[in-house]
Image (tube, rainbow, N blue to C red):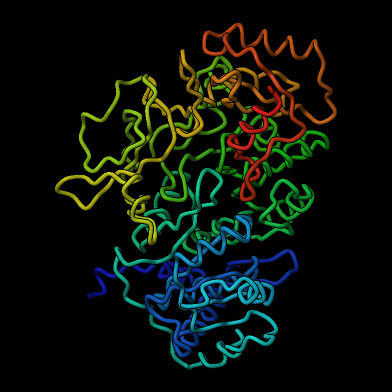
Length: 544
């Protein structure tokens, strides 16, 4: 392969090391930090060391390391030598972790001692893992320590990146499993490179900016974008439990210009900021994704920013990100009112380079793309997307791949079926109406979750709600499950106010059953996606 056709996502790092060698690349809450030059040299040394112990090009390698300097250097080292990181979310649970790793069939495992202990105890990928590297103190399981690997990689010459191609596998990123079984999305170096460029263009990010990525995977884009990464003191797997001071203080101290946070984190920090009059003048933008974001959450956080800064909510998924984007200014000035009237949540216009289609709803695989699949503008259908960030398959899951991907005749491209429902308005904006699997189908009509919930969520005493289908007297009944704001007590008057809100909209006027829930079950990764399947079972029990 020629250098001209080589695409390696790690190539951005040495380029930035040459451009801004002494600029900060990453800093931790503990005070530890690396410049771009230091990160480039350390990851090159590790890449050479990993190759010496058998972790090289094409080797699937589980990476279970907490956010740290080692996490950064290891990830870039794996990319540099062409190895394939297998990234799973510990929050998906022990059982799902075992299933994911069995499917991935990794050949190497790099992790902290706790991760290795779990690997032994639960026999993760026992039949395929041949090489182990421990980040920290090695116990009884053998293999290499990270320090030993680093020593093996010492050399006086610059490391030469693997000449990987754009279609070569770069990483396996497992979905959270919050809306189905966890699946390993196969990312190519081309996918990653396209993501970097789309994020740069969509949000106008420039080298020299300072980022606070509160979700570890997003931190990996920072060196490629020329941004310093400020890692806050928090449990990245539980963003809703963050201490707002641990986010606000480093933003002010480092002059952070860009921030990514889940809706739960943005909400918690925004509430704290509102209560204490906090302002974050250095932030040019905040980006939040992973679940629909209520307008009041955007409003609270936006009030901490300077007038020309916004909170952006990109739409996408593990298999394809970004797809669309919208800023808080447009939401608060225009689309918010429509959301409260049952229009769904506007996720904006497709980003440059992405094709977004709304097709007829189907539970069956669609083998080939046809323009006849599209539904008319304004009609709710299934969202399908095409573009350079779209992954083409799931690892070792042929049936799920066939269900999610639509091939384009005469092209190497494919459409990814998002599993979401929505429609386009007359201005070309996409409106999100909820997961396809969450729609409530009764004997008389179909209810879409997000439009219905938006009507009730407009009440100031509602924290969030979920529409589910409960079985009652041998039929499916639409039931609204409501979680109230902290300190608010349920009452007959509040129940009647909510039912009156619903009765005022054609979309929700037939929803007559309302249940209160102390705390709706949500996903671990973002603490924002509601497990409506669990709530449907709970609601069915309550109606008996």
